[in-house]
Image 1 (cartoon, rainbow, N blue to C red):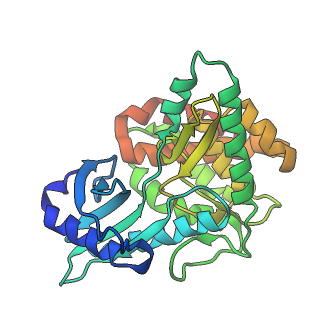
Image 2: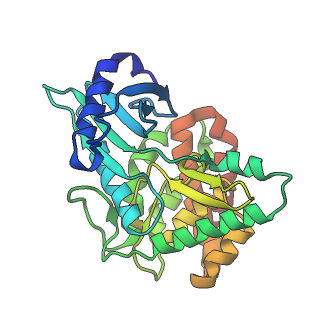
Length: 322
C-alpha cells in the first residue's frame, strides 16, 4: 500500500464519475452515486488495491498505480475477460486506463465479489464435516477442467498484444524461468549441490518435461489468495472467483503441480479432475518434481530466506532425475 498516500480522494471520485458516466452504469432515476468509502485490500508493492463503496451501496475494486504508465492492467483485463469467456467466475471489468501526462494514473476498475480466500474458507469449514470441503474442491476441479479445455496451436503468454510463440513446451518453459534462474544462480539459498541440480535440470528440460498433450489455457498463479470461496449459509460452498490471472497456454500439469506443492487441493480434487483428464505415471515420477522445483525457485527469488527449506526439499526430489 506504499503509494496510497499519492492517490487523493479527488482522483478516486473522478474515476468513479467516469465509470458511472458509461451508459451501462447510469442510474437516471436516482442520479449518479457519490463515493462514500474507501478501504485498502491486499495489493502488491507496485499497485494499490482498494475497495470502493458508493452512496447507493454499490461496490467496486480498484487497482491503481500512481505516476506510472502501467500496461499490465490491460493484460489483466484481457485475461479476466478470457476467464469469464471460458465460463469461470472472475470479476467483470468496468474500465481500464493506462497513465498519460494529463492523467498520470494507471488503473483497473472491476467488480467486487463477496467471499473469502481459499485458506480462510478451509479454516471456516474445519469442524463442520467434510461435505462443504468436498463440494468446494469438486467445484474447483470442474472449473479447471473447463479452463484447461481451452487450447491453442502454440505455447505462449496470454497478452493483449502479440507475444512470442513456441512450438515446443520445454522451450517456452525455459523462456519463462530463464530470468529467474539467472537471478538465483548466485543465491546463497541454493548452495553448490543445489546449484548443480538446477543447472542440469535447466539444460535437460527436453528430456524431463516433454509430453504428448497440446497447449492448454492455465491461470498460472493459483495460490490461496487468488481463489475466493463463499457459502450459502447452509454448508454449500463454491468458488466465488479466480483473481489475478497470469494466463498462459502451457502444460496443464504445471498448474496441478503448483496446486499440490502448496497443498491447496487434495484427493477429492484429483479424483474429480481425473475422471475427465487422466494424469500419466510420468506426472508423479518425473514432471511434477521438476515443475515444483521451478515454482519454489521463483518463490525463493521473491521471498528469500523463508523459502530456503522448501526449496532445498524440492531440489532433493529432482536430484535423482538429472
